[in-house]
Length: 152
Image (cartoon, rainbow, N blue to C red; front, side):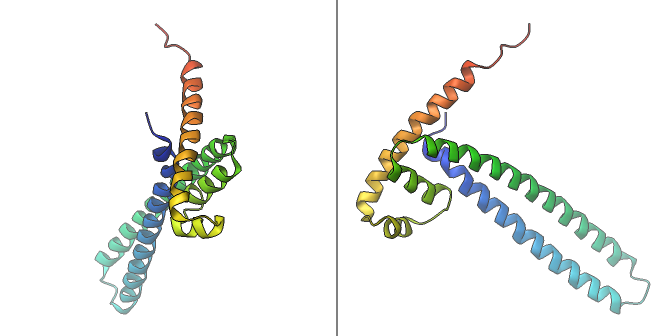
């Protein structure tokens, strides 16, 4: 079973994966642009370069499809995380969890924004995670309770 911290951190990790894929797409586009410009300077017998450009374009399309799928997953995940955070009763806990796990702010940024010392913020974070953990377990228990039994 996943802890609240692990669950909430999924959005950050997925966001970084998306950014990595976008960097790869940009690098492949730059490579395709270089290949196209060298192709225009080469006499018509450069059929090997045309194949290379096609391969690069296919890789770009595959990566972009993966990015779109990851973005869809991130939107769904953030909606789930928002629901958990909104269910936390304490407004300061909500703000802390939103700033950390949805806005991906550093501890220093959160402390400055909320007007807390880092030491107190970490203590508050532990309490907020405890509340989120209870809600996450309730949600998981409810899901497993309503699952239909497999057909025999």
